[in-house]
Length: 341
Ligand SMILES: Cc1cc2nc3c(=O)[nH]c(=O)nc-3n(C[C@H](O)[C@H](O)[C@H](O)COP(=O)(O)OP(=O)(O)OC[C@H]3O[C@@H](n4cnc5c(N)ncnc54)[C@H](O)[C@@H]3O)c2cc1C
Image (tube, rainbow, N blue to C red):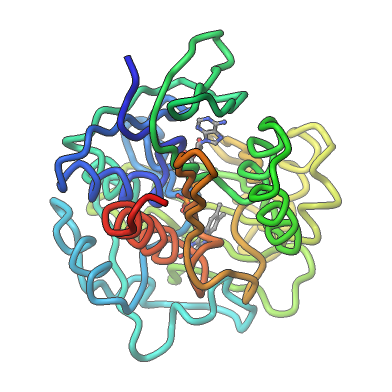
């Protein structure tokens, strides 16, 4: 069966695009590689306690985006978190603390925002698309498991480098070459991230996020447990800086995780070296390099009327979760309103 629209990628950009198309009556299927939706807006649980390990809070100033965030069940909005900051290092999104920005956190974890966007959508999880082939009526998608999906219009809503990798599987066509050249001028930055849990008795500091002064290695340490009501554990999220992370991306997890823990202990106290549990995560494409974004999503109509749309955090100014959401929304608008050539 040929779907009207397939969206590859169940992150915030893909979900918002799919949601608006679905609300306008289009038949949409989202294909997502992971076991859950949300992509980089990621939350894990340790003994049931949520830990956000992508962005630490949602922030933005666009009224439509903030309205969507505000609509999420249980959201704390506006939130003062992080209220207590330590250090003068650079936050990954310095604009997050500017006057007009509003912030939100979710008791169930930030990923609940993505789950909420996905609520009425048809989403097929654990489905990695490996090949895109245009055909006479649209696109044929092949997955890692050897399944084939057919659609009329196609939306690709992935991290920049993942988008480029998928476009490279398509036959060379003039429309694509221009897009590939344009996107090739941008880049994402990595972040090696370590989650760590401790008993409640440790001498936890009185800050929500530490931005280490002049550290070439540590981006931040977030005390995630301070977002939770009556947490069972003290939980830290330790993020490496992009340059530091890039240099260690090829090393085994144990090596860079031990280094991150040691660096965090130097900043916070020796107890940090004695976690109950740790979990390393490699964000190969954590976020778009700052200030390196396009102004809107791409929608291409091929000679035979096939439409290919690209959304994601690189397709809206400012990057981050708000940009991903806005790009998905803008692409849905274009798909619904632009006449097929
Ligand atoms: C450590 C870290 C810190 C951050 N800090 C901030 C911050 O402070 N503020 C902020 O606003 N933003 C921050 N961000 C960035 C923010 O999380 C992202 O910009 C945003 O979530 C991107 O959403 P997206 O939908 O564009 O992409 P993604 O979330 O990457 O969604 C893409 C989805 O596609 C799936 N996928 C990939 N390839 C395939 C395939 N071949 N087939 C099927 N599915 C596929 C992926 O699993 C993923 O779910 C941070 C990110 C990280 C990792």
